[in-house]
Length: 108
Image (cartoon, rainbow, N blue to C red):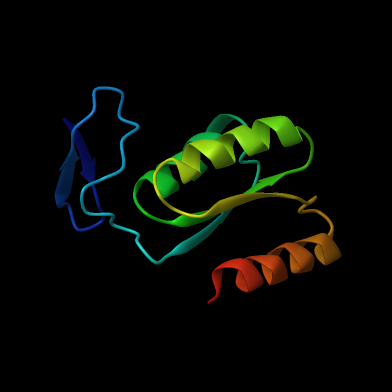
């Protein structure tokens, strides 16, 4: 069993020894997340964790499309929506485009 704490200090348990199973009660169902640098490292772990608890996720990356698509497939395995979006967050116009697409894909 995997115990996942929330900000209210309540826990939801999920079976699965690898900790990669979706939760029986998705804490973030209906929520949307945009995670920068989500194709590796902390960003990847954050994006996967958000998908695992029910959020739809935009996997942002600057380079490494294959790695980003792999993260998307893993997130989709939890039964939520996800897609990869290439954008350099230091470029304002790219951020605006990324957020606009997120709203188009996932709503508000």
